[in-house]
Length: 578
Image (cartoon, helix red, strand yellow):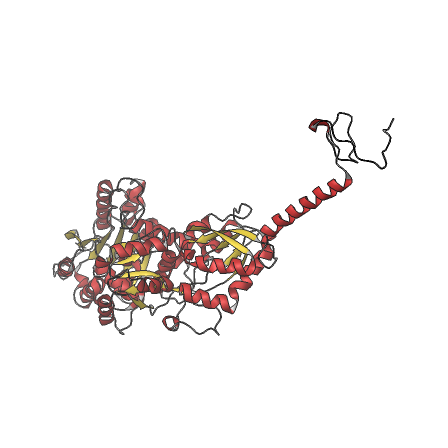
């Protein structure tokens, strides 16, 4: 039964604090206070107020909702820090950057297994090749270019003057750099192309220039390694573009040049870290251009991606990108920094087949020392890789007298550096190369092996070829069989040594063992010996069938010197190894 409601008169005082309660507040059966409707409304209002405060914390100052995106980014984009603050302020989008070398970052991107919302790379070309080769059905993520910077060469003034003086036209090309590096007179810093886009772009640029086709590299353009001379000049490296710059600063006194992005060179020149500023050289035979695409990895983040892209391509951001990073804006209407007004010139194509780039990287790994300053230590220094070696078997039978031997000597002069043509500068003998020359007739007349360290070695080689010691007969197959005995000895002494055999003859074999006997013996040799190829040069009256058969049986090929010069034929075999 309910208690009677009092009307009028004073309210009785509570007897004790434990039983005190507000008038009108009913007591529950257990004696606790039940809230009234008014109190409930008040609590709800406080809860809504707290929620509003929390909601405001995830919005920008003008009420836009804030978004944070995880971005896999090329390491050189670490210079964007202040601009990213502006982006967050203007759009409400925060980019959380995870920096890696571009090649490493591209290797980490697998459709269906992306761990980031966006990727911002210096170039997406390697990623495109990987996705195409994998047969991915999703294709390349949505991609938008944001700015540009060409891959150039920063040279110390004295080095640039030397190369201009030696160049046939006074302009510096990749071919000039390769020729100077091959002689040991030009040392440069270049990032590791297995990890960085700047290093990979340099490798592709030099290889494209060496091919001389003016088009994207094809597998046949890299079948023979034409970059060995160029790579002998690499003195400093780094696993990222920033690491490379730091390593160059440490070794600048002994290094002639730094191969990297135009923006990086300009920033380094302005940093005060160099004892002399580097001249920015734009190679005449072309450069690879980076365009810094922003890729959408998570389609659900498309609205935020669109905001970021719209902001980056706006006039204000494009100008700030140029001013703060020294990269070229996409907006042609923006007045360029004076340092960025030079035309880019010949932009080289990037290969459209993954196997081409894979071959270039494999050759790089085989050609470069493992302990170049700036490389990341991974344990005790590895043993030095065996030097590459070419074995030249030269026919000195009587039919080679006169004009033919003169052309042979001219060919070796060209390989020693007298040929200043574009091709000649890439395929000349290079510092550290081991060269074996065998003069033969009815037997081996003489053999000479030397390592090219300076011009005295090349002079000795030319003198050896200048001999007038001719013989009356031609033992082609006995000589080639003996060369493979020599190959077996070399491989026992230095497993993995890059080797090739170049056989030049102007006639038919008329003494010694026959071709069938040579081939039978060749097939019985150990696999590493059989992996060494023979490149046969047909000259003068030599027949085609036997030379072609022998070359193909060993994995090589025949080159016909009668369709061009003997020098051209020798140059075609350069860098062709097992």
